[in-house]
Image (cartoon, rainbow, N blue to C red; front, side, top):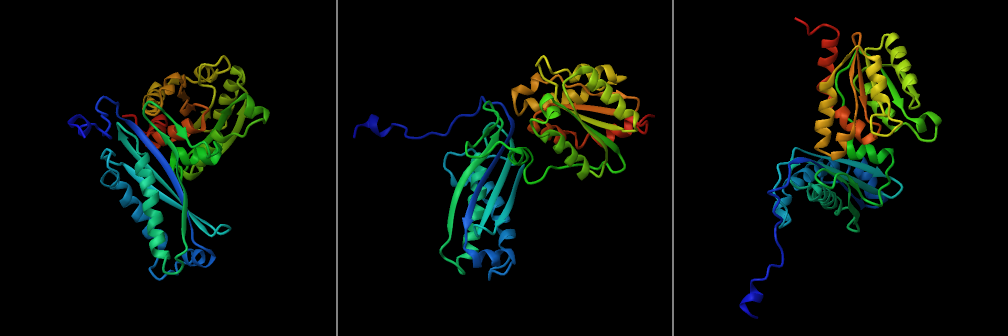
Length: 338
């Protein structure tokens, strides 16, 4: 072998120095098939080594944090969040594991999510093998990832349905805030949802968010992309005493997207900072956030917030608004005025 042959590189760590830091999220999943008897013992916490799922959760988190020590060419990342969830499948005598990893980074967190799944599965294997050594781990895959230049991606075998949207954008559960005692309403703007040809996933996400926050949901309506109809609905809902109206849909560049015009006509004062927050932070996930023309404002002392129609964008927007809403509503009510 010549000297030149011996110096050929067969692998390299990718230089990410010129990449932009953005929010990276990855969700991975996998399953372990344990047999009926072992499955029952896992469910009842009756295995000799104790609570399997609690220890598997810890193992998955620990594994994800040490990914760069296990996978040679992975970049060490400062993970902001790792969470695991488990589904006990009685029909298949299986435990399905889901791991979500998140970081503000120049490179993705796919390997961290996958390593978290594998760590949790191996822990279940270790705790269950004394009862049943004939265990099978399978279907380990990256479910979804987002962030960076490529934006959002999901595995072709994973359906893009409501369950997928919820999992991809918010992990095991959509986070909320404290809106107890607040009278709220939800308005969805969509020709197709109004005609009944699609389900209103975005509206359902907003209602779930408000309900979890303890808010009173006084009204929920779906209207077509008609400017006057949207404006009339906004005024009617606010006239009924609603102090927070959340609207989804009709904020883009399509000729039928007229929600910004309707909101602008209905409100007394615009609140540009909320829309700017949603666009700027949204652009960290996808450049398409710059195409949103969403407008937010005040009608009397009631806050009107418009969000894009995409369920994923709605869930991300709700996550951003968690810290803002309580204080914004207090200010709108005059409590923050000196």
